Length: 173
Image 1 (cartoon, rainbow, N blue to C red):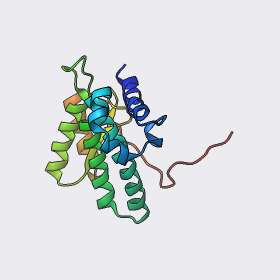
Image 2 (cartoon, rainbow, N blue to C red; image 1 turned 45 degrees about the vertical axis):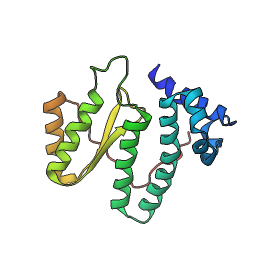
Image 3 (cartoon, helix red, strand yellow; image 1 turned 135 degrees about the vertical axis):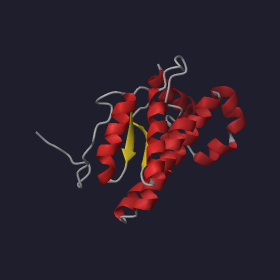
Image 4 (cartoon, rainbow, N blue to C red; image 1 turned 180 degrees about the vertical axis):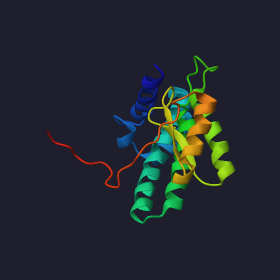
């Protein structure tokens, strides 16, 4: 239900704006219609729509930063994206089970670790809720971070990802 509520709420905003999905909605019209949208769709749907519009801008900025090898901007946008997911998309824990917040605990632990080493960023990843987080940190810190997370959250909680330089590719069989 939590996963399904995200697109359903965003579609409810789009429909009031006369669009099928937010992808086809006008952001200026969205902002100028906030009082009516809040009344018809509720605040959480509005916050999720804010996330949608801003996230699309961030993705474009992330791509541009990577193409320019501007990693400072890329990591800044990753942090903004994660903050928006947590605050606006609200996909880090389920309202029905507020005592279970493994994603937010993992984010807190990771942020504290990254602050200690003075480098790296983290964010909720994927659909959130009971999903995973992504942490970007210097390669030389990987082993220490993995041990830190495994000790705090249980053996096997940290999984080291290896990202290909090619990015996404089409595979045909």
